[in-house]
Image (cartoon, rainbow, N blue to C red; front, side, top):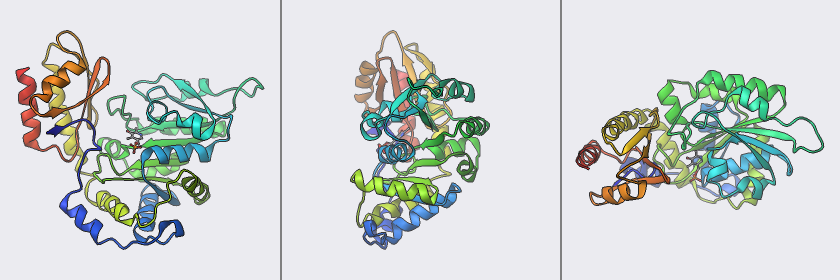
Amino acid sequence: MIDFRSDTVTKPTPGMLAFMQAAPVGDDVFGEDPSINSLEKITAAMFGKEAGLFCPSGTMTNQIAIKTHTQAGDEVICDELSHIYQYEGGGIAFNSGCSVKLLQGDRGRLTPELILAGINAEDVHKPPTSLVSLENTVNRGGGSCYDFSTFEAIKKVTDQHKLALHLDGARIFNAIVHKGEAPLNYGSVFDSLSICLSKGLGAPVGSVLVGSTDFIKKARRWRKVFGGGMRQAGFLAAAGIYALDHHIYRLAEDHTKALHLRDALLKKDFVQEVLEVETNIVIANLHGKYTPSSLLSKLGESGILAYAISPTQIRFVLHLDITDDQLAKTIETINKI
Ligand SMILES: *Cc1c(COP(=O)(O)O)cnc(C)c1O
């Protein structure tokens, strides 16, 4: 099988497995797992934040961040494509009791003007806006990336209105590598960041939430309430440490492969459009002879898996388990369809 369904499907490399096996561990609910403590410290320092919190999933790091930044009855601003709204099971309402102001950005990217217009005036009829959440890269935007100057302009708006600013950075390293950015700069803009280790970085499990010491102290309590306090999970944290050491800069290879795949798709008359490819995600709008589901069946005959992300769109995600040979075979198959 050649699996383009998601960058979550990667298996640990032999080097990662060996590193995991050798990890020192302890009970993390007691704060005694040296590998988790070190992953949290490394990640926080990387992004210029004081503290980190290791969680089982990116959904949990996002949901804990929202819970920690808001009170029930508040409103959260995000783009209509954002993962926190589309793919977290209504958790903003369920876990935090907040309403959502959905804005229409450009492939999931908001502007300071849109956000300013989305902030509720102080009015007894309106929920108080307390949090803005951005995503980088935007999954449903086809891996689109923000310009860092937009973050700085948005930060001015959220500061003026005393709103918290969170980043869903599930694929932040794809953006950092694509734009040649320094992770450290993110810490001066965002109050909290959620970073996935189990996407392009290739760890089997885990995300880290980073923020101030006080924020993470509160978040750690919510992690316990959400059932995310794990015990000797240092074996998993070690995979994250290994991934941060070995798998960041190789993401550029996935981005190059994504461009080759896009070129093959653009030659087909059933491909109406491919969203601009910036990182490791390729989303094609189909028309004519194939729908996403019939194209998936056709590709399946050659052992190629992708994902129907909407009734008209198919998504391919590049990752470290897609080899050059597998990509070549995929392009050959597409050429023949
Ligand atoms: C994958 C992902 C998450 C977190 O997902 P989990 O499967 O819960 O780890 C959050 N945001 C975005 C944009 C994602 O792609």
